[in-house]
Length: 125
Image 1: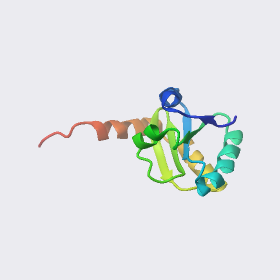
Image 2: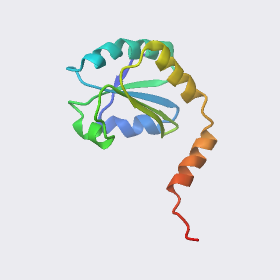
Image 3: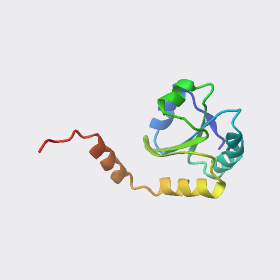
C-alpha cells in the first residue's frame, strides 16, 4: 500500500476507521522530511494493514496547528482512534519498525483505561 494525503476533511474518517494509522507531518522545503519520506514509503509497502498518511504542513496549516506541530517531520501513531505516539524528527527504518511493533503490541484495553482515568474529573477528598 502507498501513503495517502491527509487533509482536514479526511483526517477524522481516517483515524476513526480503527486499526493503526501513522501520520507524517512534513513540508517540501524540509530536508529531514525529504530524507524520511522514502523510509515512510517503504514501511507503507511492508505493512499493508496500516494506514500511512502524509500531512503537508504548508497546505494543511490548520491541521498542523491543531496538533501543535512545531517541528517537522513529526510522526504520530493512532490505534483505534487514540493517539498513542508522537515524536518529532526523522526516523531510520529500524527505529520506525520498532515504533510500529510497539504500537501493534499495545494492550488497547489498558490504553483505554488510562485515557478514561486521565479524563475523569478529580474527586475531592
